[in-house]
Length: 524
Image (cartoon, rainbow, N blue to C red; front, side):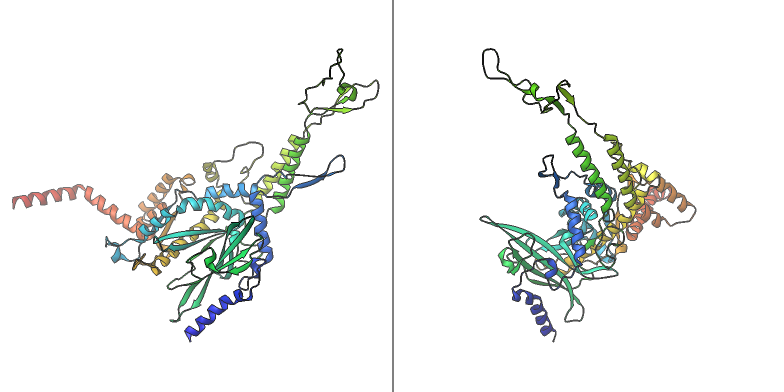
């Protein structure tokens, strides 16, 4: 019966391909049902993040319709960049404790910490996360999925920003099923062909009654970048890629979704996150419009002098040679105009540029943006003033620091989830007749993430505080180590044991005792 059900599932997955219907949008797929407003919001965020705005249309003095580029301040990118730099950097330390005490003492066993350290270093995880955190904050989400390269036996990471991931099912613990999208282009003569790979991650019941993780790959082909297209065989560009893969023994989805801190108030029923500027769209427009007008006023504010057309007339010289212009041909300041007789032949009509007014207007809007993003006053400035240092941010118990901490929690849970997914995938994968990882899978409590808060927190003050708390018996030593150095409980206990051993080696009584034992042994 289980086999029959699995065959039905395969036909169900492939049934859409048999229809031959084109997918105009991702929502045309029978498995995907995302609120179109959410898709539009993400696409708008991406355009603004890229600085892609439509041209400004206007009528010139002759009544002709003209177009020009829209000049903007890319504050969606700038604000995400500022916050991403405060949240995560490459000095972050990640520690994993092994739950299996017996295997810890086996030198032939590769610990979970060593395994994760190798995988993260191989994938340049810290650098990539530091880079991808910016678009995650700007657009509203980021997805990372580990997979195994069966040629090398290495675990690789696949990254997807907000417009390349769609949830299929979610609960209070997060998104349990989803689909990742990747687009590849191929040139055939003058034609550009767009291939869209949809990678579905779903759960189904296995023959033993346990949940079985299923990855289904579907490839679509189109000649339009705005359409998904018609389903084609995977071998057309992905040779050897399996259409369906089953992975047993997983406790969580392979993909890990990171969203900025905060509730999606724009669509409360959506599991997707919001970009940090999604509630500030009108403020961003006000800033950009003011800046665009300021730039255009500067562009139109070049010096203009009207002169009598007689002044610009060219006259032949006495020898009858061709006339020469009176003014330098490269000068565009002077404009010809018939003046009334008896009036000055030259009139300067240049208008002053309202620099102070525009700067004040932009700075006032920036204050509003800081309030909406929950950033401290002075984070942004259009008049060249320097921003606050990280030390000032913390010493003042700054709003930026508190906002940063909210996002840090989300990133910490994201990293811990990714570590568990990597180890579960490695344990479920056999390469060269051997499991990639054969140890125990740690829980979140066995994983420590130190975000290198040294720039925000005075470690000397922390040591002094916890040292005094320990001295008066208010906190155990292992707990103090765990909090100061952000390591798992098991690692803190190991450190404490090592400290006791080191201290005993330096104890004068112990040193004397060891010397006496050596001397007695020599006498015997």
